[in-house]
Image 1 (cartoon, rainbow, N blue to C red):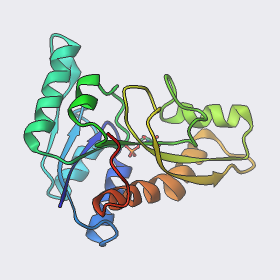
Image 2: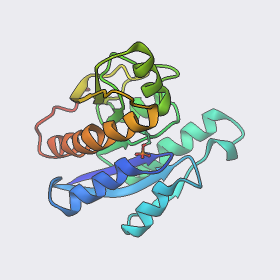
Image 3: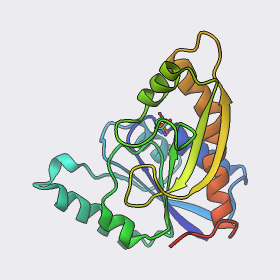
Length: 201
Ligand code: GRF
C-alpha cells in the first residue's frame, strides 16, 4: 500500500481528483493518509475532512524562522511514515531537507508543458497569462519528480491541451485542469503505486 501525503494551498481540485480516483478504483494500492496545507483557509482542507482524511495546517507564518517551518514540515511527514508526497497546488517552495529526506518520492503537478512557462514566478494563473501572451497554440500540464530546483525534476507524464480563440487565463486554467491536471496526476500516482515508474533517487 502506497501511503501518500498530499500538500495543498488552495481550492484542492487536484486533491479532489485524487480522492475520487481512489474511490473509483482508478488509483489502486494507495492510501491518502494525510493532507497538509500551509493555508488555514484552504478549501482543500474542507475536501480532506469531507473525505475523512486526516488533515492539518502547517503555516510558515507561525514559526520564528523558515528553517523551523522546514523542520516541522519534514518531521511531520517523516513521522507519518509516508511513501509518496504529492504537491497539488502547493505554493510553498520545497526545502532541500525535505527533498533529501524523501529522495525520488515527491511529485508535483505543474499547469504547463515543462520546460515552457515554469520556474520562479510561474504558478497559478501566471502560467496561463504567460502562455496566452506568448501566443502558444498548445499548452497542457506536467507531473514531475521534485528535486532541489523549481519545476526541474524528471518528467513522469504530460498531457497537451489546445488553446482556443478568445481564451482568458481563467478559461484556459480551467480547461488545463479539467483536461490534463485532474487526469495525469491520479494516473501518475497509480503508476507509482503499481511499480510502473521507478522513483528516481
Ligand atoms: C491550479 O492553478 C493548478 O493548475 C495548480 O495549482 C492551482 C490550484 O490547484 N497545480 P487546486 O485546485 O488547489 O488543486
